[in-house]
Image 1 (spheres, rainbow, N blue to C red):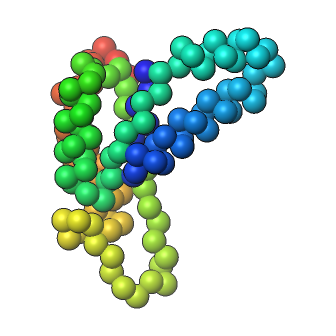
Image 2 (image 1 turned 90 degrees about the vertical axis):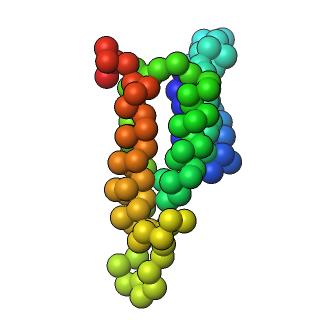
Image 3 (image 1 turned 135 degrees about the horizontal axis):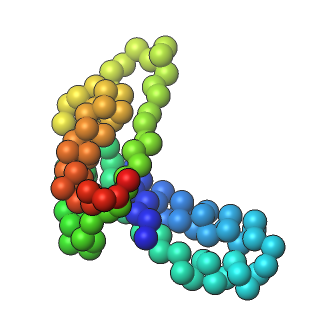
Length: 121
């Protein structure tokens, strides 16, 4: 199982479909591709790192649907235009880049740690 946590559920669902399409297009054996796609369990979920409530909801939903994880990969982030004059904020009022790239990841990791298997990655 692979949980695809994206800023919106639509983006997560699109990512899952893109992964399946890539498998179908890159596998020479169509039967093998179909078999792999059927066994692949991709779980699209919303987790907006610019909103601590979204992170809470994401982890709460994970706890109710999955017992534990072997590994977690945190790779989301945003890069604002350095020429921007206005300051954008997260839902909780932090500057958007710091709130998303640092505080959001830290908070998500803090909530995820009890769910990660000690024997995992």
